[in-house]
Length: 485
Image (cartoon, rainbow, N blue to C red; front, side, top):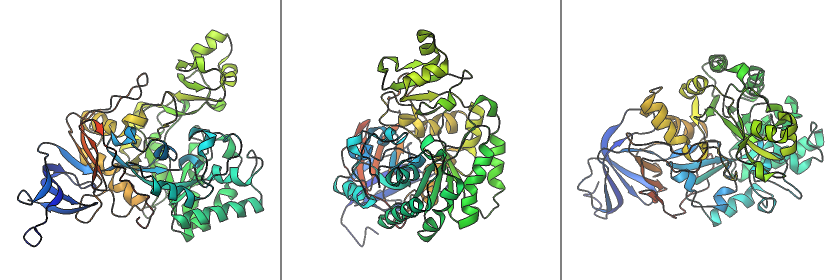
């Protein structure tokens, strides 16, 4: 190759243990990058290059794809995206759990849980095209692919979210979804567990099926419940595939609540009942605790509930709900009502269930981090290194190659991200160079914003975005659609 073209490549990475992202074991080889693509792989040490990196002993993987984020406004607010780039994440999927920053019309307070995304003044994208234009005008360090939130659509067209939509409202929402998908969104998400979508009957959700099918778009869902009736909620999600032959992705699959600990095999078996032809999949985060707004339905004494913020009582943040209840001499439920609106971390999962779901062959990795939370769950900063360190290296629930596949190739395939998630010639140069012996998540539930260890370098579309513990403001991310850029 270099005999025909003497121009130096931009970057030459020598002697790395290269994981292709497809689940194959590593091969020690060299990788050359020019502009935004991988242009050669093999023995390339004589190739002229503007920059040469000795990667001996280090692992080179495709940039990690965070399939479950709430970074819709964060990518505009903080384009460095330190929490993600420092983990090796080069692509984020926004608009999960039924909430998206576009197409959104918010005139008063953003309804729960849209308020997790940002302040009222930040909701200024009435169309998906507006949002895409803003990202293209001011790119971030990460690529962005966007889902449309069902709750966001409901908020746009309904005067009361605590009921099902009528025919006219459904027609209006379908029209908005169609326009957003035509502009470049990759699918629809629902958050049926939340009060502002919970009254939407299955018929309302199914009404979006033909629109999604027409665009070959994805349906992702935060299930109607993750507690006792979780199997029935999965049935409701899978009905979208059965009715419309569209790809269904269950968000943060889990067995929530003490009553349901140990049910992971049952949830996994429910996937197999879809049949071998099924394209349904799921994502999960590597922690035995969830995080969201403070939900009265989840208040219990079965496990610790940690309050991360409270609008009426900010002085009670970073304390357990039990401690607050003892201070106020009120019940847990009365205390929770007094704190609202508020945010909480729920230590309501079982570690064995978490590990089993992570190891499930259809599971991708998503952080579900909340960047606006003043005391975020550690998953915001630690999810991907935690999978590689704790679960692959230390506990051995899967190989390093499989772990990487779950956060690269599998994710790119399920979300239709063309030329991403794989190290091969011609693919985009989204890459992460890390030390598999040293990689470790450092963020904890107490000190939750500590960057991970062991990530050496990150490239987004061929540009360095992280070097030796420092974020580089390359702003080389792109807006991604299911058909490419």
